[in-house]
Image (cartoon, rainbow, N blue to C red; front, side, top):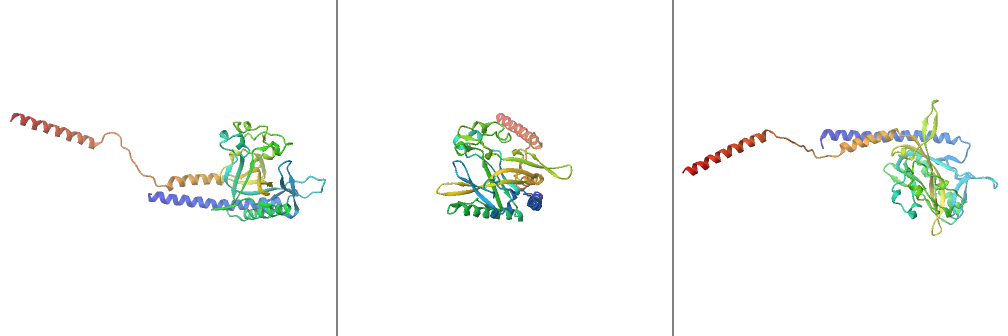
Length: 327
């Protein structure tokens, strides 16, 4: 690789790594601020994931046919319990909010279609506390269900620290919720109406399957408001906030699987995603060594000299032939 290009590629990579550090600092500051604001709420059903107090919560069995359990606030017998909504902030690392390959999906496979996201905390403290809280939630469900084997929410540690994922299926079997009504899909995930065609007497898009999308917008008085957003507007590298609920689902072999169900995604900051995309583009452009080729089209001095040489050679040959004939 050309030395100049190598130096430039190194500088671009350094800039990309610096962006990651700056993004981590911005994420931690934003998460800590939002966590502090949520701690002042009087509504106990909404909490930062790191601050969920499981000892004060109840596990309530739901489901008309398929058994499932939810994490809810404690209420008296004649009161309605509120399901706990946990919020967590991170950098978007995987995005499947707009389903792909729907056109080739069969009715049988449609029940497994889902919207999902994955976020990273870039090894920040607040995100780490939130991830640690999941094991506490798991234990709370385990205590309620007694000797049932609990399958935990899978967690992974990547090159940028642990990640958290959440998903929500697009369809529910009508037999699992016979009293639920079918609702329309968000126009941003079914622009061609392909998902709507997959609905049948057995499959519905229930309220439980809905995921909401928001964008934080700066207000004129230096505050913020939350406007509706489109699922296609989220990009890898955006700082987002997820709203999730914890649901334990009855599985085979007398096992119960704990899942994090995606309820909403909010775009908090997309400036770093734009900068990172430019840095990646430059890095890919200059980090690979490509062969240098040239193309010459036309006629050059060599061609003219070749013509002269050929003409002179031809004339000499003719003179030699004439001498031979005269002899």
